[in-house]
Image (cartoon, rainbow, N blue to C red; front, side, top):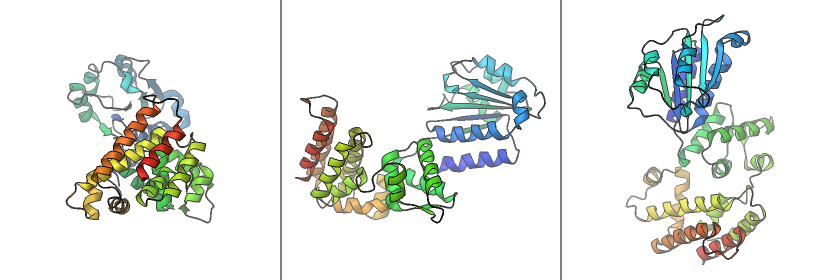
Length: 338
């Protein structure tokens, strides 16, 4: 299980057991877990009738820290606790005065800060007091190689599996945005036939619009196998479906692959375990690099990386006499395979 997922589950289990803390400071680049914890507190700590009196939602862009402190110092009206949730907390400009509240927080207040897309200065006194007063949770962005594991874990808790190809399609298409991934997985879970317990490429193609045959992962495989016909079929499909296959994402994926291939060239230990660890990839993909290295030597790999950079620059208007993205990709693929 991924570290922040385990930490978030532990916090949620405590809350479900009604073991509440006075302060929850939820922060980090990945908003998915911040929303998951804060939404659970908002929806479940108080009953519907109690929420009218003892639930307060504040927004960092609209309040000073003094407003948060004064709200937190109030006593609940009808419930055992009052819940104060500060959304967009990263927009609060000054935090120093929070120290005095944190040194003696009100036990009947559950104060939740949602500090997204970053972290505050952890050396400050107020942050150190926050750690003493309650729970500090940091939600970091996942690396690309961790997303597949996260998808499998998410589906496992819902008693559903996923094929390797389907997993690859989702990772390539959705990136590392966990909220977006969770939403798409929920859509797939709702639309899958009741008699199947597995997410398949066909299900994804039907409900999300990602082609199981024409995607960046399949283009990458065409390069690995030097399959010129397949590569050209895929880029023709991309040219006709630009919205679902933006050139910038295609180039980013290819640059990542050939960048890893260059690193692979210089590795002394090319065992599956070491390559997966060094490149931070799923061991399933190591065989692609083992095959590609036979076709693209170091010099060719460096040349391909240069071509991808050049294509990216031209797509942004540098030395480009009006050539559209489809033609740029065709030209790139030709140069890579010849």
